[in-house]
Amino acid sequence: MKNIDWSNLPFGYLPTDYNVRCYYRNGQWGEIEVSSSESINIHMAATALHYGQEAFEGQKAFRCPDGKIRVFRIKDNAERMQSTCRGILMPELPTEIFVEMVRRVVLLNERFIPPYESGASLYIRPLLIGTGPQVGVKPANEYLFIIFVTPVGPYFKGGFATNDYVITRQYDRAAPQGTGIYKVGGNYAAGLRANRWAHELGYAGEFYLDAKEKKYIDECGAANFFGIKNNTYITPKSSSILPSITNRSLQQIAQDLGYKVEARPIPEEELSTFEEAGACGTAAVISPIAKLDDPERNTSYVFSKDGKPGPVSTQLYKTFRDIQYGILEDKHGWTTIIE
Ligand SMILES: Cc1ncc(COP(=O)(O)O)c(C=O)c1O
Image 1 (tube, helix red, strand yellow):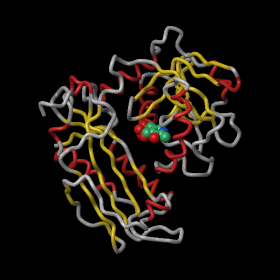
Image 2 (spheres, rainbow, N blue to C red; image 1 turned 120 degrees about the vertical axis):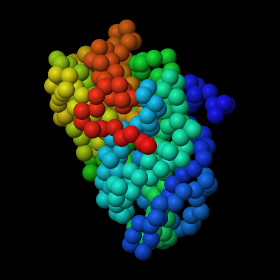
Image 3 (cartoon, protein in one colour; image 1 turned 180 degrees about the vertical axis):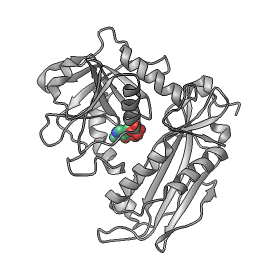
Image 4 (cartoon, rainbow, N blue to C red; image 1 turned 60 degrees about the horizontal axis):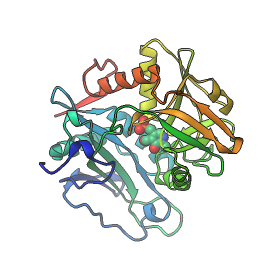
């Protein structure tokens, strides 16, 4: 792959050699199929197109310093997709099929895994869609599960760095008893306006409060939130946020490093007491927050005076990355070596 500039890859779609597919028909999952086509042929009345019966996931494969390929907590992604399936009445894909398809698609596209030194990785995108036709609002009878991969650039090109975010009160992402806890496309469509609004104002992204009371912290764009104070890692407990696998891992790492961990509702006012804060998710692991503005209240919460990431966020980030790359011992059995 002489012509790929690994260090300057965007977070975009670059074609690779193969994707893997598995169809659900007549009440059962079929054999794993390998395809070199980037297209799918879909019925115009498919439920995915009309009624949003679709789920996706996101993960990364890394080329590690020991030369091995690792993926992180892939079974947890399989289980989260199963939870999404229960949420929007789709058949659950068994974990073994999910994991085997990840293994196959990564190995089939091995030449697209960026080298360790580049900081880039191979993004893995599992997608499950209702393909069977329905005109009434009902679940489909047929489904397609597909995984494609694409190399993506390092999130922090100039090193681990902070960003500014803005609280949106005029747009909601998800209702308290809606689909916010599931990874369905509709949640992301619901966030597009808020995201554009935040970017137009010059922020890295939008920040959501709970939709019902507009009182508690929900999510930071397409990432979970955490704050640090008094040696404690504090993260929102909410019925409308995606259960982030990165956040769950950071809570464990924080505990392993001797911090206290609290998952509970966080009122907006408490933001002023945090010594550090960050957004967390697969894309960046941690995106430390320098400043969070609430324009409607004419308030700014500042978590970094010099614009640099704080010491606890930096320690958590480094520990997390070193586990992902097989540099630190994986004592919780989170990584899978793909061979
Ligand atoms: C809405 C939302 N919240 C949080 C996350 C972070 O989740 P994870 O750590 O599993 O990537 C994501 C990304 O997957 C997301 O889309």
